[in-house]
Image 1: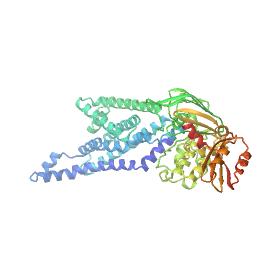
Image 2: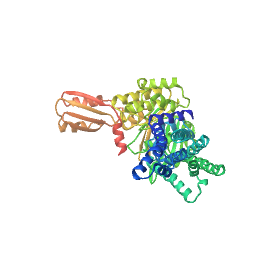
Image 3: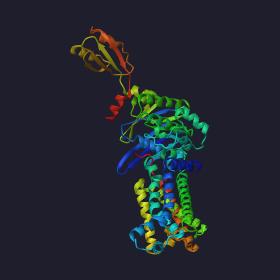
Image 4: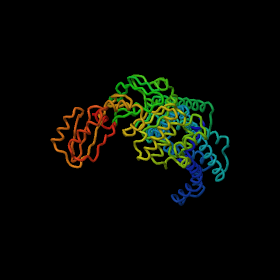
Length: 256
Length: 298
């Protein structure tokens, strides 16, 4: 699978996708603490000129914890859109543009093609999420004070990274089924937001992949609930990859 | 090498292949001709393991295509009509990616064979159509397949590019490869093919060696140019010749079609000399597939 992983690396770096994702994550990681420390208090001061500064700070409740939580919320809302529309082509466009024809006839295995996309983009997103959470942790700690345990932050990064692995498997599966990039992106977003909404409304995050986001953003980890959510996420990822493999085996290639 | 029997395929309601049967022998160049939409690419996709079919059998290199785990198990080289590469890769990276056993030295040799040494490190997005076609041939060869399937390899190229691709194909045959290729350009087929199959509306109309095909179906035609125009009476007299099938006159030119291939043109020449009009030219038109293609297509 090494050559397939190398191909994904060349694609991600030369097409600018890696740059877009890195810059977006780092930008969000740096922006959230600045918003809490500088911009929001400034906006409050302009809106309520007679309010004392202590009262404004109390209302905002800015701290390292709220900065990290705010960043993780941005990661789900904004980061998700950036990730989905940056990577919605990883499978769909390959099928649509017939770029899989040569590799398939040359003997590249479906498992390797799917697996390399999953491992590479899942790994890249996991790494970017962890690095950007650490940046947010460090920067917010400098701006406010260090109050959150580093271990909890790393744990939260791991859970968020795992959630993005679920998103990547969605992009791969919907890409193979729909064979169109934008519909793949929209369907993946609908799935992600629907899971979040259903999990919140029915209070069943612990039984859905959205639980990974919910637990990590609270930075409070109850191991039993997380294990259920992680297990269900792994199960769903496996199912989606099997569906993708089956769809690719049955697919007609080199269609005009 | 290829043994196809009674192949049937539908695209929805459209019956694309209606019981196609064909056979390609080892180390021959097989030309596949037919109009657009006749079923050439569909048949070739099936041969490469890229497309499925409902009925019939397709045996490639002794393997049943229906029982394949993946298309790559067939060990064929395939060049589609519109080869699509990763534009952000260079030729060397792409060939390494498509290799079953990546070997930089082998990739270097194949790039040199395809005449792309100067462009080995250049991104594919900057390649011309001809360069892409040559890279496609290199990809088709990278895993050293015995059988190479080429779908319209020369159609979109300029005469120089076409000639180069045809030369490479003859070289492949000399290397012991078996080639099946489709084309609209009948002169290309005539130049290099050993046998020909014609497909029309999803059915094979004929499958023969090029020599026997031309001998059986295309009657010799002579173009005779005179110094002056020939009278109607003289033409009518010529038509009485027992070996002549058809005579057409235009200005001072006569086009004479004979009834059989092996007739001696001497008696025809003697007949036209009797006109007592100076002859400027007496040429046997080279037999070609064009007329046969049009005849069978209609």
